[in-house]
Image 1 (cartoon, rainbow, N blue to C red):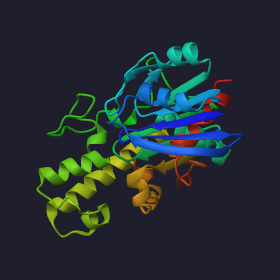
Image 2 (cartoon, helix red, strand yellow; image 1 turned 90 degrees about the horizontal axis):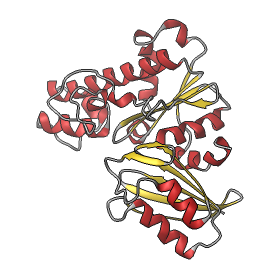
Image 3 (cartoon, one colour; image 1 turned 90 degrees about the vertical axis):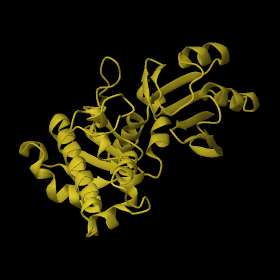
Length: 280
């Protein structure tokens, strides 16, 4: 059996599968328990697990967790620990890397970018069938490219990240900054006659387009797939990207490019189950 786990900033969700059939599924809040302890709790009553595959919302390099702003990490050298103690195959990758593996399988593409906007802004890149990771596994951290100065501090410590304009966290911060009703949706901000409310939407849209154009120009994908909670709740943003991204991307990189919303409910978890084959 294979244990797949999506370790996000809000929840730790797992599915236990046998030959792709879901046997069991459950979740807890990420703040309630350490990741390693959560896995050990599962292993204590599930004795037939042979593979553990984890999508992790943070930075991971060679099975070692290096950064995890929103997840309780009680063991950093996690791959070595579990493989030695439990005789299992252990795989762990950044959540956007997992998501892009799932998107690549769905689209049958070897050159694809997954741009997800939820709590933060993330990018996964598969280029010529290879995940783009970099020396410290931060090569595609698009949310933290320098964009414009803000009065806020990003989780990475800088104050000019593009994620500070286009993300769920950014929307909350700007609404508070301008004393705007926090319940207002992106669509309501867009159509508002209030100058500050409208400005929040306009800045979000510009940052989204800049991020999409940067990803397209840098990685020249065949597909750009848009996902994450904010994008899935505002599916019309895909049409905005399609109609306006030509002003933000290199023209030749737009040729034959397909831009669309994700059709996968939980791409990060689905991608986690693909890690075993990817690393084979």
